[in-house]
Image (cartoon, rainbow, N blue to C red; front, side):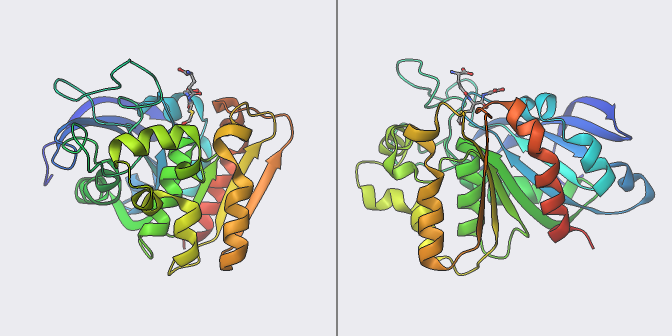
Length: 283
Ligand SMILES: N[C@@H](CCC(=O)N[C@@H](CSC=O)C(=O)NCC(=O)O)C(=O)O
């Protein structure tokens, strides 16, 4: 062990192990909890690649582990899964002044805030792309082959992480992502507070803007339910398809008839995403 980690729980699942781990984060300056699934292959001494999952608004590390149904296929494919929390938390970490669920605690938006009082703790991009991978790779039997996926706010996070860090991830995908946060109500509220009023600076955290100048054309897989109540106002996946087409960036958008925004939708298609990631990660 190179970093002080506290194991909160350890559970056997599909021949592997699911752990919840707490540590002091320098990036977000508070204690953080993440989940890590280690597939059975690690027990034969194999260093396995890591699939990072970023959850959406209101989530912790536990929504994905308890609801997505990912572990049978991850065990088969030999993938580790790491699911961090969605924001800093704890004493001294400010939340939404009105207690709303779409900003602050559980809603870090995977950006590095520049404005007060958010800038000290709300640095989830730095946490997810730098501190957490270093911690995981220094303390668990995993390789440096990584991929990233997420849902809704976490889908936005996954797309932005991949687009801002060419070569760092081998695959990227998203369920019902917020693709154009600079132009929808959830993103306008969060970016206005975390990043300040200059909308040009918001574009550094917007997949539709980043894709135009991406130095790497990593194919993007997106699943989106057409019965999703957030589709028209917050998600707008066609905006990413248009930006990707203009840039020559490969995107596959699968509109899934009748599916909503929930983890029932995610659990239905998570196997496809894991296999998409494994094709790039394993071998
Ligand atoms: N107010 C509701 C709705 C919040 C919600 O739907 N959250 C989604 C993510 S939305 C975009 O980021 C979610 O993943 N919820 C957790 C779950 O397990 O379904 C609420 O408080 O749940």
